[in-house]
Picture (cartoon, rainbow, N blue to C red):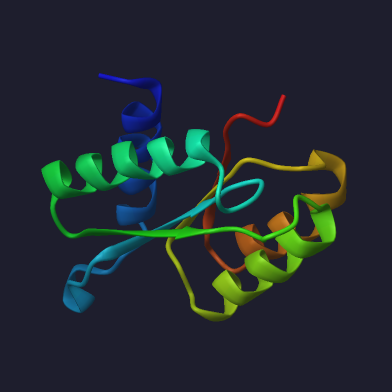
Length: 118
């Protein structure tokens, strides 16, 4: 199993723990990339979609800014918080700059994991 698939499975299970069975709906996992239009991240999305299909009841939201800046990622993440996604897997352009918005997401019950950010 590829690293990204393992990551997605972990995020799905973590997020699913917080989804009430009475509200049986898809677990929404946002894959936030450094910038859209990058072949590496497009391939990561393909793997995430394959893993979501295998898991079932998982929706992958592939998103990111068009410019690879922390400010643009913050806007994307704020939008995902408003959409009440269950988990955010982020490849940070500037990890330190994203800390406040990611803490906000966690305070709202959203599972946050980082990948390809080092």
